[in-house]
Structures are given as structure tokens and as C-alpha cells.
Amino acid sequence: MKIIHTSDWHLGQNFYGYDRTAEHAHFLRQLAQIVSREQPHALLVCGDVFDTMQPSAQAAKLFADGLIAIHDACPGMRIIVTAGNHDSPSRISVDSALWQRMGVTIVSDVEWEGDTVLADRHIITVSDVHGRPVGQVVALPFLRGNRFVLPDVPEPIDSTVLLQALTERAAARQSALPVVVMAHTAVRGNLAVADDDATAIGNIDYVPLGELRGEYDYLALGHIHHPHTLAGSRSRARYCGSPMALSFDEDYEHSVSIVNLDGHHEPSIITQKIEPLMALSTLPMQPAPLDEAMRQLHDLPHTQPAYIRLNVLADGFLPGDARQRAAEVLDGSLLRFCEIRKTSAAPANTQTDAVSLEDFKQMSPLDVATRYFTAMGTPLDEEHAALLKQVIQQHQTQEQP
Ligand SMILES: [Mn+2]
Image (cartoon, rainbow, N blue to C red):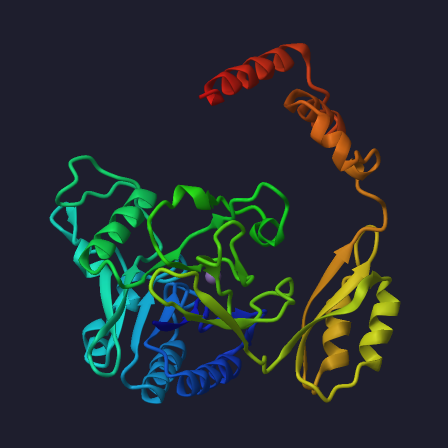
């Protein structure tokens, strides 16, 4: 089974007041070309189709026109779209009956009958042009609840067990075919070492990969915009990432993933780059004083369209007219001024007595907490230290098998 895995389109995004319709249309045209060339069995869109719960008419039109062009590029292809946390389940499924006629399945929410989940609505068989089944897709949207009841399972289960149960159900139907699971959630790779995953995840609450025990052949993930295969997954779990940068910090290459599955073998994955219509540029690369940053802004060639974030080094407040001055420099050009990022020249408090990684590994949790509170200016008192010590001990006893 050959699939194209994409997610996090965020159609209709308003970027510092600028409209990104042309950029999204540029992406959708590229996707139609990729589909036309690859002729995959399925296209999976794993959540966050729209940027907001109430997308504009323009964004809805972008979605419809784009999807029709993609469908026409490979009419036999199954398209499956799931809702992400940015999507409104009711809004995204308004035309789902109409879409179904074109081979487009929109899974906006968990399907219930009374108080049990309609499991089979979430398992979709994908066929080739001759109608022969080539694989199965378990399509799960962003899950808001955490108690699900299946008809033949007595106790309510949580979202990770639901994923596992549906995967097993799909595998039991046709054991030779690969099972692909679509999910929109934060999952972390299994290796304890700091890898790409950790930096991409930031502060999001994530589920360790090991907790998603289903026997899937490929876990097609959406939610995190940085494309990466999860550590320890043997190419079986991947974030395809967003097809374009949605913030200045997403200054990496964006892509869709082309995944080939052969039975239960390790999938082969090709990353297909998406060319941006507009660059997102932080200027200068390293923060510089306002006058220097403004000088560089003046000198910038104004021939290539780009969004600009000014990177300014300053203590205290910036002059009140700094934003206006920057915007005026770019007025009438192809460059769009967005914001000023201000960095303080004075080193942060916590950096004054940095500790090496080796030393850090040797420290007890209590040492770490003590250092933290000291750095924050309110040293840990004896009572709280004792309480914390007790909690740490309890936790460590529980961890023993
Ligand atoms: Mn997203």
C-alpha cells in the first residue's frame, strides 16, 4: 500500500494580520502534482486542516477546491481526513456525505451509537484500482474524552487503549494486510537520550510511544509541525509535519511523507519537500541593537516576498515608534513586517552557575529542586525540603516492580 501522509495544513491562518491563501493554494497545487506523479492508494490528512474552529468562507473554498484538484489527480485514491484540535468536528463534517461520494472520508469525531463506540466506522479498507484491498486505515481524530466503551469490552477504556483495540480489530479482519493508524496527538519516541524529538515537542504533554501498543504497521501522526520519525519506532511512527512554516520558529524544511507498506515489513518513507511561496525571515540572524537591525532592514533586497521578524538586542523598553519605523521601511515592498523579537543583553539569572550534563546526571531530584528554588530567589525551607523528600521516596518505592 502506498500512502501520502500529511497533516497540520492550518488553512485560513491569519499571520500577523496577513492572509496566507495564496501560500496555501501554492501548497495544494504541489500536493496535487505529487499525487498525480505517485498515484498512491490513499492520502491521509491527520488533523488541523483549518487553523480555527470557524474557518472563513475563503478557507472553506480553499479546502474544497484543493481537495477536488487532488482527487482529480488520482480519482481512484482514497482520501481520509481527520479532525485535529484546531478543527471544529461539526464544522469540518458539514459536507461529509457529499465528500463520501468522491471517495473522501472525513472523520471528525468519535462515532457513537448510544454509549458505545462504532468501531467499524473508524476502520477503512483501502483498495487498488481493481478493487482489491491493499490495506486498512484506523482513522482517529483528536480525542477529547478519555472514556470510551466498545460493544464487546465491558469496562470503559482510555484513548491509548481505544487505539490499540481498533488496531487489533482491523488486524483481525484481514491479517495479511498492513494496518495504518491515523492520530492527532503528542507522542514521544522511546529512547531516553535527547534526540530531535525532544526539541520538537517543547512543553506539550506527550504520551511515550511504548504506551501505544497496537500492532500497527505505520502510525501516521499529526499535531507536531516538525517532521520526524519517532526514535525506537523502526520507521513505524512518524510526524509528517506541517507543509509550510506556521511560525517564525518553524524555520526548517517542510514536506509531506510518501510511505510504502509491504505487508508487515518495515515501511519505506520518502520525504517530499514542499516549496514555500513566501519565506519567513528573522533579521538579523543574531540579535543586534535596534539601529543596526533597522540598517539591515533598509539594505535588504526587496525583490523576494518574505515575512520579516526583526531580531533586536535591547535592555529595557524599545522606542514606542520602533514597530512603525520598521513597517514604514518595508511599505510598498514585497516584504511584510510582522514583529520585533527583543532579546535582553544581560545574562539570565539561571545561567550564572551552569552545571555540566555529567554533574546533572549525578544529582538527586532533591538537589535539582534545591538549586531551582535558590536560582528563583526563594530558597527551599526545611519543611518543604522534608515534604519533597518524602514524596520522592514514595515515588521511588512505587517504581520498584
Ligand atoms: Mn497543528
